[in-house]
Length: 288
Image (cartoon, rainbow, N blue to C red; front, side, top):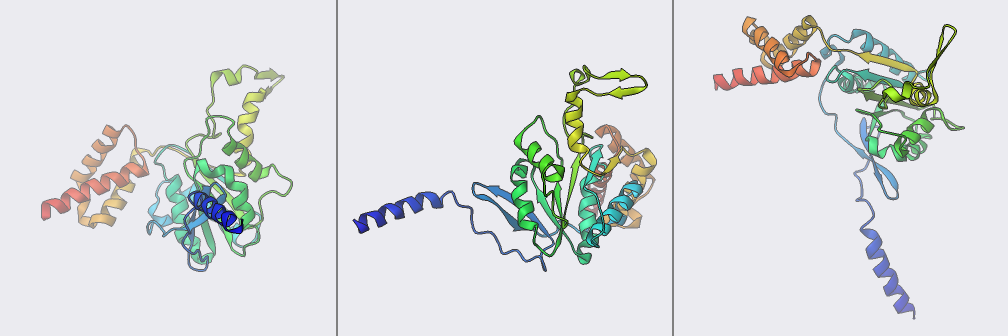
């Protein structure tokens, strides 16, 4: 009987093993400065990742106010001072995600640790936050390109962690998010059907109030706008010089940069970087 039970247990364990996540690489916060949170059936795990690049705050042009505000907020947090969760919203390619990466490169030596969470893994965010609660390090939990299509579980989890539970997030955790949407949710004309004017005050209906309630939990809002031509060309100059040397930027490059933005239908830091890669790459190819 014991042998039969043992055999059945072995078969059961073989089946369960397929559902278990692979053993993650060992995470050492004294060495690792960034990690990914990966949700699985039994909760989640942290996977250490190498820093993507050596991007610095000086590489980001045209967003001086945003850089200063986020840097000050993060430094206050690292020193145990009051700080706000931050929402970076606005035009695509305008430097929102790059600013977070450059912030890590700048402040990792001061103790900043960054954990990126995919939008689809936000449902397990409370578990991650609980796991970090007693850690001695200070963490920014970061979600890139955040948006929701409705009142899904990920939306509820983020809303709860930000400011919806009795305990709230621990003092060693801040949440930063980037989004193209100011309120993180789609806004339709029908949402404004219940908006009314009372005296000189505008009172939104329940649908609008519900959508605003999530973004309102971020204490620091930073808006990012499309570049004007001067800022775009300054950024092109910076990256062309960085990738190909000062001689790579000339009148011909300037005209090509303007055409590049026109064909793409917009000016941004991302477009400037992409132009620099194309321009310098072609120059080096012609030399070969």
